[in-house]
Length: 439
Image (cartoon, rainbow, N blue to C red):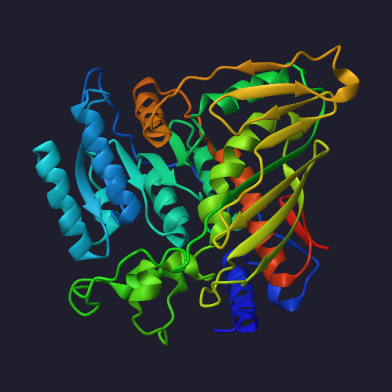
């Protein structure tokens, strides 16, 4: 598929998902939900004091299996009392192997469902961890919330912005649900320290930030996901079900698309949604109170080395915020040298390259801003700590740290950057009207 075919495919798919006039060249279109969310009538399965958290997992693939095995390890270390009771996946081979691995680790049976709705229908499951492909995140998360479950949804929160806004509406309409987006680095103390420094006004007005996520994968990014010859869409894998709303009757079974979907723009935003969100999300948490919503995005992407990949192997983003701040972001799978993690204020700069938070004054303010290093502890595996935060919030009913509002702001960046790369234009977002304008 050449880039022009890919561009047309993206525009058509984006128009269907967002209900927009993207393919007609319209300058402005709404990405707001087409129907307002309603409060779920399902009664949440409330956790009694001291009770084991009973968790279901939708999508026990690479990341999902990692979550499962890590959960078992955390339970064994006594960090929480959690039992994985059920899995749901369209791939019976992979689901069966993961179930066996969990059972051997936790010593308890794990039920398996090829239809995730059967898992959600159970009234003995407190929470659901969603690790399905990007194009299923919104549907799985909304259905789980409406079924009365607390939800941990892997990043990116959704594939497209309109889906994020719909999911946000459901979360807002059901405030008694605990909702967490599984973005790495959100628990790192240095970003929390940076937020406190910015909120205190130490560096003055934050005007400019930069970050990146760069790799160099000669064999092609995401090609390391293996292809299992046992997968058979006739007997043990629901290929149509995996495609979901993107199903096309003329799309033949393709194990590469199934296993390496991040390489394909129809199913993933590639570097932007899979890699860059890990850097953008915690950086935005540090800045959020000062900069507000992203309002203008322009991005470029290219196929410089990995020409077989449908998504870009090099991307560069420029993001402007309503609070008068600009963030630049670089992503690559063909060069591993990234940008310095840095927040620039008019009075001082915050350096976030190490585990610690370093503040250095700008030259005109050396007598006003003290150079200092805020020592931050090593918390170990930050992804495990984020999952632990979710479980603790399930017990306390306090909001989780990686919340839906924050994730929606990130999705504005992801979606507008993706549109900009494929359509060759800058895009504006109005947080009041939830309308996008092509510039």
